[in-house]
Amino acid sequence: MIQKKLDIKGFTSLNGDGARPFTLNILLFGSEGAGKSRFIATAPDPIGGLVLDPKSEISIRREMELSGKQIVLPDAELTKEFIYDKDLTELRKMDQEKYMEHYQGRVDRMTDLLMSLANSKDIRTIFIDPFYQFAAEVKKALQGKKQKMKRTDSGKVFQDNDGVYQTCIGILNRINTKHTILTFKYKDEYVNDNK
Image 1 (cartoon, one colour):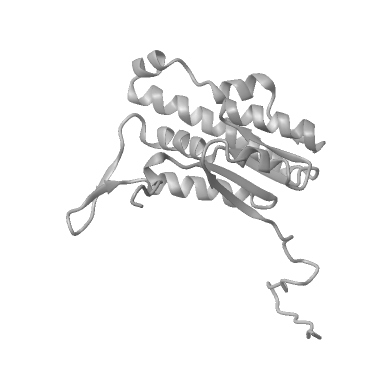
Image 2: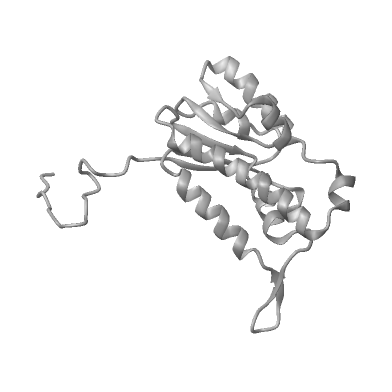
């Protein structure tokens, strides 16, 4: 198909020189052991990301060795800090403000690392494994120990996660310059046992 060159100030053609590169945005949703973390090693490399679960770290390291792909993670101490948060007793003793500050610091460090990957010319794929853990940390940073609730006009009460969603969307939009892989583990409560 022959296309006419369009020259409109402030606009670019999706197939022109100024077009944003095509990126894949993948959300992997599956049971434990289904291969979500192993799938990350099939992405275009170099691959960089956050590992927030010890089982995911083992799977990614094993698959990296098997596939020969180049995968970068934060320094070992930082990865360990992200995987193993403070002792639960210590977290329970924190007042609401200190608790939120603690998680905001963690989210800020994770976001800074993700932005470093997004700004790197070498990295082609960014992952967060598991993403639900990242979202849970954002929620703790914004809401603290207590769940915020919201009442609709009809009187129904539900969890108010608007701030969490908007924060996560904002971060994802910023790293979307690269291929993106987010993993989620489904819970048993999602299984339909009515057979």
